[in-house]
Length: 117
Image 1 (cartoon, rainbow, N blue to C red):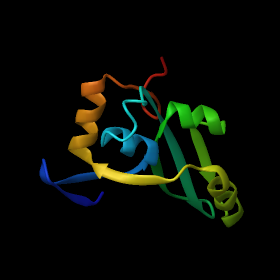
Image 2: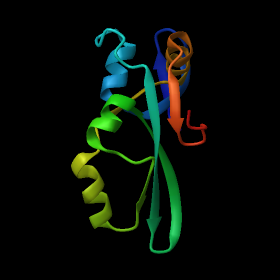
Image 3: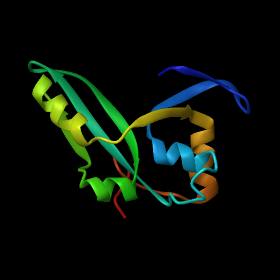
Image 4: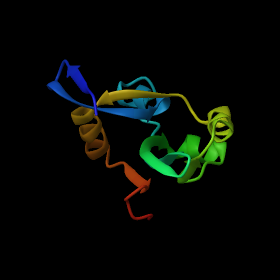
């Protein structure tokens, strides 16, 4: 996890993989269009060794539009290329701002470690 220097929260953690439409919505550019967020887990392997899981926060609108799944496994360059062909662009956000955004807007989360509603 990296660090962000937030104007509001100072030095804090960063959530690195948030779809651009969520970032724009949080900053007020999208007029509160995001009400639901899907947590998409990408499991990355090298050979048979599990390297890491990457959690991506994707708006439900984009998730449905693209026809995404809650989990993907990358075992080869070809797997990564296939995923990159349709995966939405992501950016990062101050972890505290992201928490406030979710709680203040009562945004529903789906996937990941969250129970599906």
